[in-house]
Length: 271
Image 1: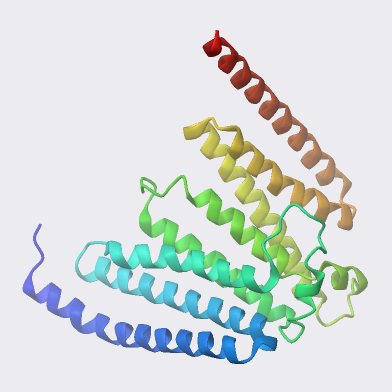
Image 2 (image 1 turned 45 degrees about the vertical axis):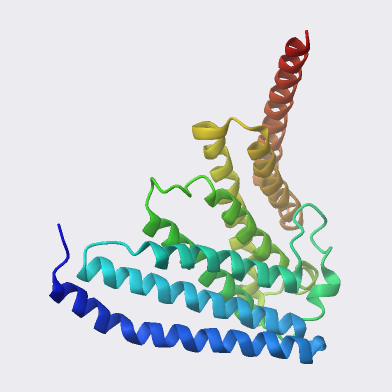
């Protein structure tokens, strides 16, 4: 059904203020990039500010798309593609600040964390929750049959990674006291990391089952579960820890079987 002039006009009018706001965000980002060069000692904070800016861009594009759906009955692909791109940008900016390591120890990015001590526990948690929420909304807006559906596990992997790398495990260990004013915020962040990693691990297993049958996806799932294994060793929650270890071993065996099968196929081809 073709759009009417009235629909187009109404949408154009209502979306105008959002476009102005996006221009303001673009100018703000350029300021951060300029300051980044002038004040290298503040680099980690500017990257965090740039990540927050990206989240604002994501949410604004999602709002504009919601307006289009409400008024015109259609998604605007450009808005959704911009949101997707900015999710990657937001993650990349935080990775610049705190690193992107998943496989190492929980405190491998100690030096980087020491450079963002003015970023409160609440601010860190709120950023991860905002990133999680806008990622969820973007994926929902694209729909279940999007061409990107099997790329989302990689996004979930990176979101879990930045959640982990923004968290100060050493400080959490020292301050596990209910009288500590930051305890409940830190505990929520701690639990969120576990939840995000579990979700990413499950998404990779689904991708493997439904699409690729590729051992690489299982290895990514294992990496997420292994992150949780390391975290659970801190909490002493032995039942969950043992379940996670068992699942990791099961997936490792599956990977080994797949790789053995692939090697045998290669040998047969050579013959």
